[in-house]
Image (cartoon, rainbow, N blue to C red; front, top):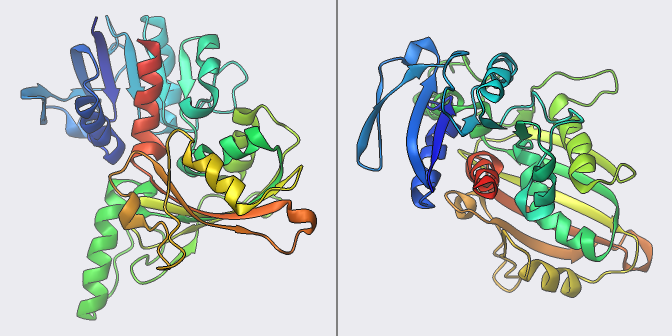
Length: 333
């Protein structure tokens, strides 16, 4: 039986990815509402051979909607998610608006699908870097509890939205032509450069992106004691994040044991060709559902073989956002 679905923020990068993934996975849809800001009202978008007209997102947009996929930014989620719930819809929200709310499940289906059952109308999609890290970390943690995570992220332009992706391309042309670089959406030049993730820095010296991973991982793992520290960086890559992850475990673990666990883990593909020095790259992960994992090696600085290093690549728009949300929606069917 099909569902009546609404997509809030349909014209954005994640919104467009929602449409592609819903079609690919043949999600059962009886009716579809395409919602966006007033700037996009009237725009025509094709989905599975039918043309739809974009409507303005508002409090009255959710009559007879069963599932509302939100990717219109935190402010819009806070403004309209409650109206969607009041109208009878279940909201799967891709913003940070509700992630740390104690009444809202924060879900990665490969990890904590059971949390969906406790929802009160809203289910939160974690941050992209949190998802891409933890799809491979969770099966290792389940086998041998992780005591400490050290994560450095290499985050693609797509995490800042479609305008940022287009601007990075334009910046590259400007640099190559010797022209001044445009920075309207991106805070700094990203083409041929990289910079600290420009989310707000807190009193502890960490930016919001770094603290999202700390708090969200503890909530998803239901493990408040796990020690996590992060450094998040924006790099000139189009749409796939990479992450360097160092894990310290409770008990000894070898790279071979980690590789065996990861080779059987849902949502993970091991790309670990030592002989050819071939490991996950953003171009490998782009357009893929799985998170790619390689460079699986012992951290020899930690005694008793209790630490492992990983290198992970994942598509920020797919598993880092739209795919994870659609997987949650599939669990609601």
